[in-house]
Amino acid sequence: MTRPTSDPAPDRLPSGSAYVLTLDCPERPGLVHAVTGFLLERHADILELKQFDDFRAGRFFLRVHFVLDAAHGDPGAAGLSEEFASVAGDFGGTFEIRDADDRRRVLIMVSKFGHALNDLLFRARTGELAVDVVAVVSNHPDHQGLVEWHGIPFFHVPVTRETKPQAEERLLELVGQYDVELVVLARYMQILSDGLARELTGRAINIHHSFLPSFKGAKPYHQAYERGVKTVGATAHYVSSDLDEGPIISQQVQEVDHAYGPEELVAAGRDTECKALSNAVRWHCEGRVFLHGNRTVILR
Ligand SMILES: Nc1nc2c(c(=O)[nH]1)N[C@@H](CN(C=O)c1ccc(C(=O)N[C@@H](CCC(=O)O)C(=O)O)cc1)CN2
Image (cartoon, rainbow, N blue to C red; front, side, top):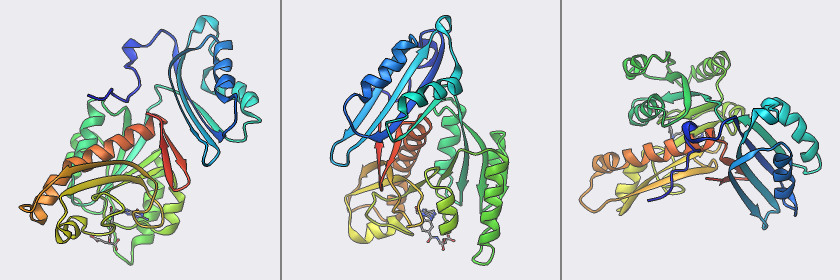
């Protein structure tokens, strides 16, 4: 049984405001000391600290979840960021300090296959995914009823080769209007233009229904059937302009055998798609995923 990777439940946290500090910078001695010293000076209670030193690439990644006791002063995330900037000034990387209870605003995109959408909506509704699904966009009307049952705005934005630019413009309008922090392609079966993929770099996650890099592109389960695979899988990855080549975040697999036809492979793969995608969304929204070239570092 693996330990749950989510942050401690709020009812078990020490009193005070909780924050998450993430740091991504060139590797060198003393970084952990500098960060924990900064926190100790502020009487912070560290709940979880994860780090990865990529000595091959000379890169360092850190995520620390901590609580501040108001009795010792609590400048808030903005104040802490201002104060930490003087510490991180010579690290040469990037950092972020967020309120740990901050819920990321998520827009989900879907086409006809609704299992991943349904799974995300259920996990968000039950609180397992601490996110706010603020809108759903689809090039088909099939899932409007489900989405509106959840009380979430549904936007039918049809796409043809000729109307794709206007459709993508509408998507970006909605991203701005709803202050979206993460776009999730939950089996959205349209290829985003290079421009849109670039615009959404690091803030759009796709679920591809194969264990990449095998079977990229359309109909991966049919490709897998023709290849006679004994395992199917799913890959959640950041969207890039190179189809299904974006940095991988989470993968899941499921054993199959010779008796599975294409439709049985499709059915066997659904749960792997849902698990891989919900893991990726959770880890991204908890600030656990760091882009590292065309790979990711996941501190979980
Ligand atoms: N720029 C990107 N766009 C998308 C990516 C990506 O990685 N980069 N992932 C895909 C999802 N996908 C597989 O996971 C996928 C979706 C669609 C197609 C495809 O050939 N679509 C056709 C139209 C199909 C249809 O109308 O039913 C097309 O767009 O011409 C391949 C793979 C999401 N987008």
